[in-house]
Amino acid sequence: MIPFKFKTNDYEMYLGDKRVSINKLTPNRWRTLFDTIDTLPGLILQVITAPQENFHAYLISACELAIDEVVKVVAVLSDVDEDYLNEYVGLDEMVEYLSRTAKRNNLADTVKNVTSLLPGAHAKKA
Image 1 (tube, rainbow, N blue to C red):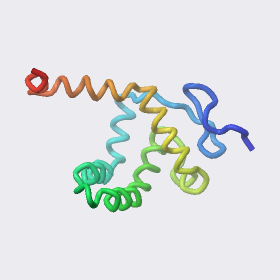
Image 2: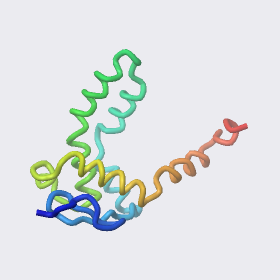
Image 3: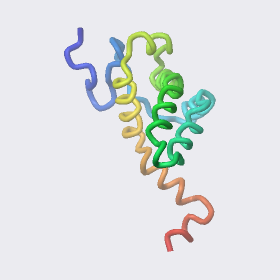
Image 4: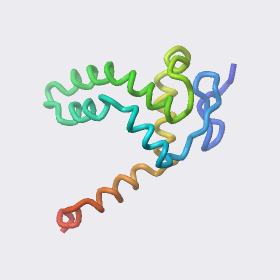
């Protein structure tokens, strides 16, 4: 048993008993990721636009539907088999992996930079 599973260093961690890398999101990995994601973007949009009084109900429903999508995404990013993730890896570990992947790849700033390139982005700031 590994005493502290989450962090080995900034670019590695454990998913279950498998040591995995926190990978860079190369263009090829992005393509594979986008081919894998099916309903997750729609679920996120539904939760974001849910009426305030029904927010928690939407969130719970989306979470139930999104579990398979999360497993698929983690499998693509970590190169760990979906069956192994479903059987041996906690959701907390998968969320930690996704969070660390986002941090390693500087996704927050990347989204801001891409948004600034979209038509009309500069007009909104003025």
